[in-house]
Picture 1 (cartoon, helix red, strand yellow):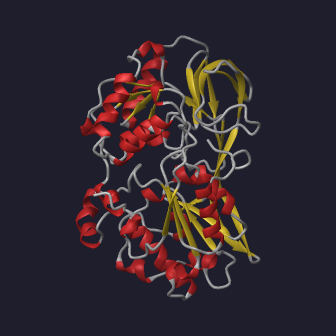
Picture 2 (picture 1 turned 180 degrees about the horizontal axis):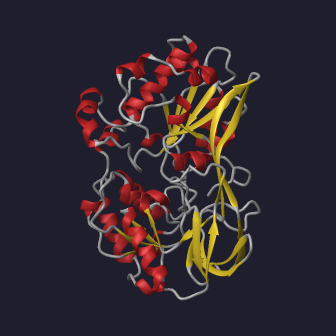
Picture 3 (picture 1 turned 90 degrees about the horizontal axis):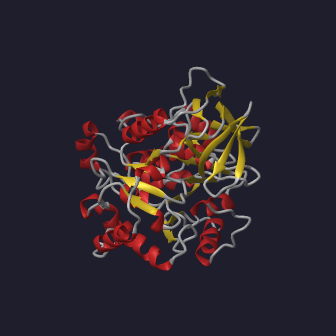
Length: 420
C-alpha cells in the first residue's frame, strides 16, 4: 500500500497530476501497485466527486457507487433511461453546481453502456452538449484485471451496440492514457517482468507461469497459508472447514448497523463476526496509527470488550479496534458539495483468514498465499489479479498445478492497447 505522504511522486505520476490540473480528460492506467490511488488522492478537492462501479470499490475509495450518483438502472439502459435525467442528478451536477471534476475508480469494471449513460445524463443535467456536460472526468484502473459483467440475457442486444463490454467501447471515451510503470508492491525486477507477461498474456506468459510454479514451495495444507480461491463458495467452504476443526474459546462480535434493513452484503467482513482464540484472521482495514494494514494476517490471541488482540504473522501483537464503513451519497448544499452518510456499519475489521476469493482480494497486498483455482479460472484477468496480490511471488504456492488454459486475458483490452 502506498502513502502519498511518504512516497515521492515519480515522473509519470507527476505528469498525470499536471495533466489533470490543466483540465485534461485522463485515463490513469497501470498494473496493481503502481500508485494510481496516490494520484486520485492528490487531485481530489472540494469540487471533486468520486464514483466507482461496485460497492466494495466505493468503500475503498471513500466515494459513492456510480449507480447511486447517476441513478443508473440495474439492467441494460432503455430508451427512456437515455432520454431523461433524474432530479437527483440535476441537483448534484446541474448548472450552477460546484462540481468540476468526476473521478471514476476501477474503470475496468464499468460497462460501456453505463459509461455512455453517465455522459448523457451529465449533458442533460447541464444543458451542455460537450463531453460529460463540460465536467472534467478522470478515470483510473487496470483494464487487465477483473472485467465488466454483462449477463447472458443482455449479451445479444449489448453486443449489437458495443464492440466490447469495456468503457472504452463507448462513444463517450476520449481520454489521454497515462500508464504508470514503476512498481511499488513488487520491487524485484525479474518478478515485475514475469508479472507483466502474465498480465498481458503474451508469448512468454506460459513460460513465466511454469517458472513461477517451479520456484514455488511445495503446497502443504498444514502450513495454514491464506488460500486465494477462484470461486467465492470454495473460499467460504474452506474457511468453515478449517474453523470447525479448531478448538478454542469462541466469541461473537455483533456489528452495529445504522439501518437494520441494510444487509451490508458488500462489506469486507461479516456483520456478525464469530471468532475463536487461535483461529486465523485477515485484517480488512488500515489502522489509523499504522500498527496494521489492510491485508495483514494473524492469529486471534485474546478477546477484549471492544477489540481483538491479534498476533500478526510478522510476530507483533496488535489490538484491532472497531472500524466504521460508510455508504455515502453526494449532494450540493448552499453551493458546496456535501457527502451524506446513508448507512453505517461498525465492526471489528476481521474476517476468517484461511481463504478469500480473488475478487474479494482485489486491493489487498499479501505476504504469502496458496492459489486454489478449483474448477479453473473463469474470468479475464483472474489469475493475474491473484498473483499480483503478492509482494514477493516466491511466497505464492499452488494447491494444484495451474496451466496456460487458466490464464484468460481480454482480447478486447489487448486490441485497445494495440497488442493484438
